[in-house]
Length: 523
Image 1 (cartoon, rainbow, N blue to C red):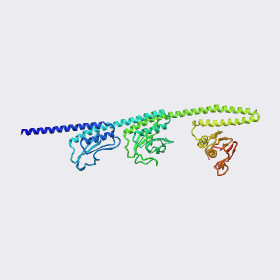
Image 2 (spheres, rainbow, N blue to C red):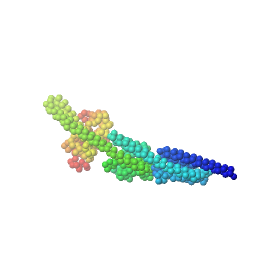
Image 3 (cartoon, helix red, strand yellow):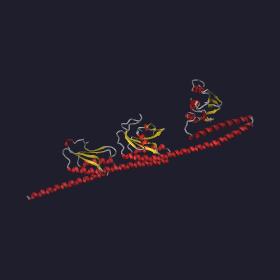
Image 4 (cartoon, rainbow, N blue to C red):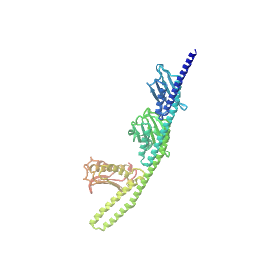
């Protein structure tokens, strides 16, 4: 009996020793599992490490970790094991489900599936619970790391934008850099900047980056009822899901979760930065919205400074142009005028052959004065409000056609053209200029040409001449576009004649009486 008791006691001791060793082994496995979980900083890697380690720790068949959208901005599931676990245990196999807590909030669950021939023990449940507690801390740390890393990227982008704006006067280049940088670290399909065009309700996509950038860049749309419009109107960053909303235009690509950040300065809206994910993508989190709003505020300040500097530079250029215009008018024109008067005085007392040569030079001086006055007008045009005067329209029309000419036309004005020519009469003048210069480009592109518009004694004269081979084919037929110009002159009691000029080539002279009142010229 004594021997049997001793043997039983020894057997119990051995059994307890094995249990202690097994427990120590599982504790070591738990410590190793904890170490594997906490060594990751990336959130996705941490989630995978949690579920894989849990399956190994309790010898489960499979495991499923489900976390809410509060972690990483979207609800996600991570699986590990032999096969994907089902919603219910198969064949009566037992499950373990433990919560994943981040501080005092449950952000997900860890479910482990066993096998039919080896059920989980109470010890397995305790180990899974202990592992879940460590997993909560690890997930929280990974989430904080992602938050810090994302904020660092926003801050770095802000610094790059600031440096670029201070170094480059071209704001459009910097705006393109902004959308490229934001699109590089924010998971998006499209990043764009929209700015008001003409009125606050219409915006244009001035910069874009991403999959659909080429399709939307330069497009205009009505901002009323859009996230970009709401951001500019409320001066706050806003977000939403565009998956189920109507498109603003037929060119708009399919977009999902979207954030709009206002760009503003001095109480006014400069535009909006819009970032969109694909349909079904993760919604933007509150932290992302806050960081984007901070980026928008800082970028707005720098952008306002850059625009102010650009406006200041434009003002400086305008002042310099005005100075040049004044110098040309006060010095060059006056000297040429004085030289012309001196030549006229000499010509009166000179013999006939010399007088003819002097008069020719006097005519050249007069033409030079007219051309300089036209240049003075163009240099000073930036100071005047954009009223689309007839001079502006003539110069713009000639410039649009001059690319087809080998020699740029010279343009001169005489008399108070801008005061005398308005409304529909100005439209007729533009039609005469366009038709005449186009004919030169079509029939004598290598010829030199001159355009002169003059008002005197109640008459407006538009004279277009060139030194080409002669009157162009069809110049005097009703089939020519000149017939339309003649009709315009007839309606105003004037005339339009096409003939060979003094230098050869073709001369178009369009003459009409000026309106007697401001009201009649608009009829």
